[in-house]
Amino acid sequence: MLVLGRRPEEYIVINDNIIVKVIKSEDGHLRLGIEAPREVSIVRGEIYEKQQQLK
Image (cartoon, rainbow, N blue to C red; front, side):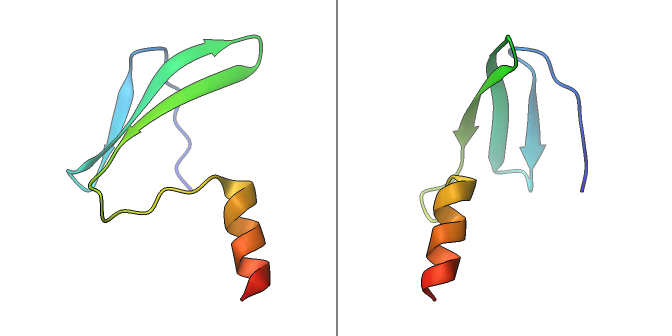
């Protein structure tokens, strides 16, 4: 796992086509913006875990 520190408006790029940007960070809360091609599935962790349990 890669762990990075980013400030609001900073971002990372994954595989040249996915951008994860820090939108807001305050009081322990973080807001991320994610730009990715439509064919890339983006699911919150708790939803992903429930989906895996149903398989």
